[in-house]
Image (cartoon, rainbow, N blue to C red; front, side, top):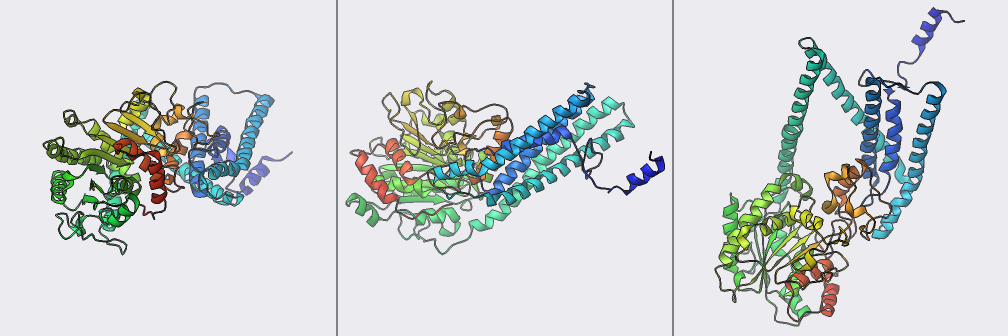
Length: 573
């Protein structure tokens, strides 16, 4: 029998740092919730299941690290509530057996999904024409998962320590329950103001300071136009130096008259490209007035087609969306764009929704007001175009009352974002039996949806004089992400609703799926063309054919032009 003193001596010789189960008392305590660890293992297994896009090892590590801590937090919270309510636990051997079963199942799920993860990812990669991944990705995944999980755990325990400290301090002045309520309200208000105010605004200011200088750079591959039909030319009212980086690329790009003649057999015109940078004027209205002046100067209102294009965050206009239109109409076109931000699209989606709406409406209203005064038989057809966040600007115009008396001829929206309210409403009101990724709305009389495989003939009613097209991929997370994924299964994962480019193994799990698709957003433009947020020039061409309906055009000419466009070099954002 061991003496008490010996027991104390043995306990003192035990290492000061050891892993155990229970309730941790310090931030760096190595004690963990047993239920939390069990649920974390299950959530780790869930994090490895496929989502919309294939994942790089670093992204998978981030997904797994956050997901593991969501599981751990839920498990630890459930255990704490159980004990707080005084619910008795299963006693004795039955308790140990039950714990062993759940822990064993969690470990088995983690090992099984880990073994299958590379194969699941390679199924998506094969579908997208990407090189397969190998098991060598696992060291990166494990290290990133562990590091991120530890970091989140330290932050969470630090916050808990802060809350406990405030509760104890207020408990000296107030009754315990009142102290908890008051302290909780004060701390939550403080944290919310920090997250939504100081931190968010600070992030946007820093991002703007970082990306604004890049907008002023004049690269060697930028070619200042000399023809008067382009902004930035010597005759232009919109100076070359103030167009911004993307504006300079836009006005200096596109097909030449010789290229158009080679494809269409002659008679081409120099395409008009008008652009106004963010630095060109100090208010939205002044920039809109400058665009109108440029359109009038270049003779844009004497062309057959005029497109008011809403840019993405940096001012980018995708050549896959603009060049096909100019080939389609043999250069008898005018395209106008205005920059509203310096920020990349993934930041603009959070910071510039109001800016894109205001800029789009003011620019369109200014142009439309002048256009509507021209004789109906002598003015150009008027269209709208927007990619990604630009489609939000197009929707803000379509919902404006100013186009009721003088309606436009149509609009093309490519890769609409998940914050597009009109898109969400049309999708929700689609005809029964049509899938969420490719809806049919009001028999296709005005609005139609399409993808890489042309779906513009799916409407059962004649397509009216005003034609609106949404071009979207079922695998585009920018289209299909939603905060509601945290608590409800989306329609686009239901039987019969899943798109051909969505993994058949993708399922829905509370919280996990939302986080997975959220992490798909940054990689939506880093995969092969025809998937995610990368829309091919052929799909854009087919969409423009449907929207503008050129006289005498047929499928054979579309195929011939597509083969030419696919061979042209592409310059991205």
